[in-house]
Amino acid sequence: MSILRSQLGTLDMSDVTTGEALRPIQPGDGVVALEKADKVIESESTIVLTRRESLRLMEMLENPPPRNEKFLQAQSLYMRTKRAGFYRE
Image (cartoon, rainbow, N blue to C red; front, side, top):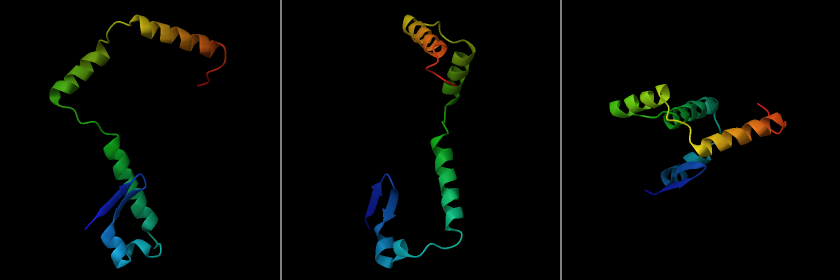
């Protein structure tokens, strides 16, 4: 059984041979699609960290490293751009 994958999703070839892929849209299909979309969004927006990684993240948030020269230059450019009106929040 072959499966096609693309940016539009996954199509199981058995759906094509049984006609399932061509069936008319049924009431409730949108709800099922939204539930699936919510699951995908949740899985893609969740980061799983080990205990060690989570402790390191908290340490970095509480005590960030000193700002380097590139950061200071970028911050200065951002502030100049914002003052000039090219950037809107």
